[in-house]
Amino acid sequence: MQPRPDEPILTVSELNREARELLESALPGLWVEGEISNFIHHGSGHMYFDLKDDQAQVRCAMFRSANRSLSFRPENGLQVLLRGRVTIYEPRGSYQVVAEQMEPAGEGLLRRRLEALKAKLQAEGLFATEHKQSLPALPRCVGVITSPTGAAVRDILKVLRRRFPAVPVIIYPTQVQGERAKGEIAAALATAARRDECDVLICGRGGGSLEDLWSFNEEQVVRAIFDCPVPVVSAVGHESDVTLADLVADLRAPTPSAAAELVVPDAQAWQQQVSSATRRAVATMRRDLRNRSHAHANLAGRLRRRNPRYLLRQHAQRIDELATRLRRAALQRVNRERARLLHARARLVGASPAAHCRDTRHRLDGQRLRMIAAIRVQLGNTRARLGALAAGLQVASPLATLERGYAIVTDETGAAVTNASQLKIDQTVETRLAAGRFTSKVTKTLDNDT
Image 1 (cartoon, rainbow, N blue to C red):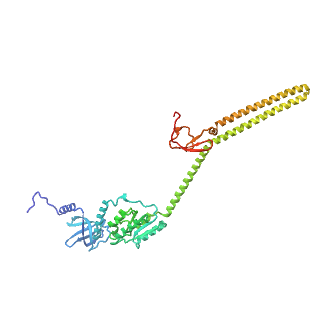
Image 2: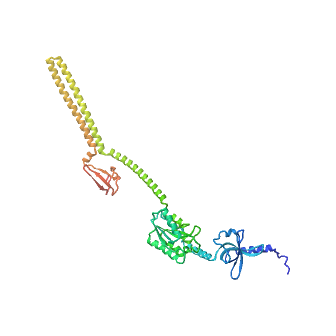
Image 3: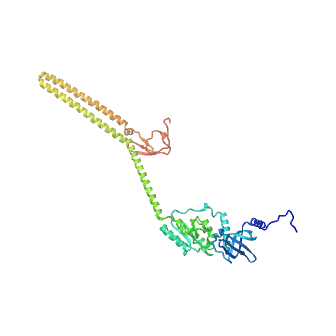
């Protein structure tokens, strides 16, 4: 049979290329499980091997860029699970799988279980941020849920003693690997919550394979951490190991030692912060006390200057001063008149006529009487003016007003009440009388027109 004129004729290269493109588009990525055979680790870093089962085999290649991240050493006879894409090596037209990921078959099954459980719990919201609790700044006690004989508990205790030895630690011993581990870890979390001895819990173990760490991927453990009312720090394995316990915990630590670093502060730094805060508080209190003392002194001075007793003392002192000046003026006047009298008597004695002396004596006696009368009148007028001033001062004195039956009403601040509109119903006021004072409560207010 001859090809028709309209039928294309392909070269071998074109055939292999089209077959490759068809395979790659139809099977872009898939998982394959089988046993490794004919394994070659080429000097270029690439790996070539067959993957087989009881009935068939397929050629595989895993290039250096992909096999660099393998956590195990592939070898003949090892059952593996790989993810890759189906293609054709065009120069030989051989069908093969280019592997992108590869892991031991048992671990692969665990990872699929892990991803399924992770998706289920995430859909229920167990990993949501709003459920995370904050760690206490300084816990009264730290709980550790781990194996009592492992390296993890020694690392945790060492760091806790170094950072803040005063914080007590309670160990809740559990298995961290094996079939019984999940039940013991969940029971320890429930026990710690029931006892309410600790403010924060560290739950974890040292590093290991996915199978070693599987207890911290169990649904029972994840739900126990989620339901625990005490904040939980997950510290499982190394920084590269991520378990479901890490995702549900309130805080994830990369290692057990890092968890201990996170749950307690550094004692020395904490003491320095407390000392600094204490100094700032004392300085603030002292500054506030000085300001309040100055304000109190100013208010006390203003109160003294406005006190009626202070004003009365000032007026009394003024009256004493005026009285002293009046007595001094009267004495000076008397002395001047006495001097004039003595001078006249001396002139009289010098003239010596008896009649003139008698006339002069009579005249002097008259003048003396008039002078005495004038002095008495002057003293009487002065006393009258002084009495009028004293009476006016007495009338102006608040105490005199109180003596006439009036009262001074002040509010809670001590301010005088002069208008009923200043008062409120049920307000307490103080009333001062001439003798004593009393407090009362306002029940009704009236204006002057009522």
